[in-house]
Image (tube, rainbow, N blue to C red):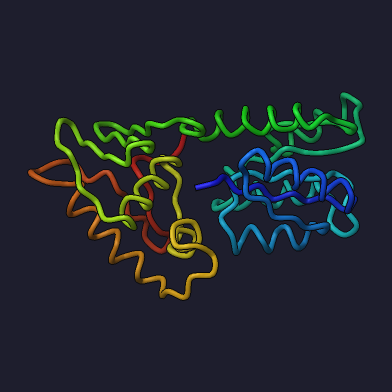
Amino acid sequence: MKPVILVVEDEAALARLIGYNLENEGFEVLETARGEDALLIVRERQIDLMLLDWMLPDVAGIEVCRQLRRKAETRSLPIIMLTARGEESDRIRGLDTGADDYIAKPFSHDELAARIRAVLRRIRPAFGEDVLSHQDVSVNTAKHTVVRGTRAVKLGPTEYRLLCYLMEHPGRVFSRGRLLDAVWGPDADIDERTVDVHIRRLRKTLNQGGEVDLIRTVREAGYALGSPEA
């Protein structure tokens, strides 16, 4: 699954250029010019990283960042601030608000792509790797194989995608709606309870012979793999 980048930038030409370049790098790109729309998109879509302009026409980028950090479901969303403000005090303010990185305009495409990959690797260590591992479970995404301990695990395609997504974000809690968006796609016309069915199937196949259940059910929130994030 392609990492989804939300570009929040009110300079239309720059937003199009960033989107074009990132799509060529293998990312899925969403764009908006308004902070309020960005907050709405994050509630409706599963975003892997946000590129957030400081100066927006409605809600300032730094306020968007502040609001996202206040909510449990978006607290760990990676955010890179984009801004023409290059003073050290502004960088410190942006980082103190919760941004993961800060890049001043003008910037090169190569620098931006490198910063995105660095943040994704730090927040999501599995990014760019062919093997996902968590405790005694290993998934080879190139070969589409799953192993628990020494036992090969045979999963259906949906359970496989579900496991991969959870393993890419260990400890992070996802609502049923978020999992539907990420695993089935944002346009899928499927009831959220479908997620429960596939979680049960995944658990039944993944956990056998007294093995520890690695999938955590969080009451009124959703599901996560393993312990909560530090």
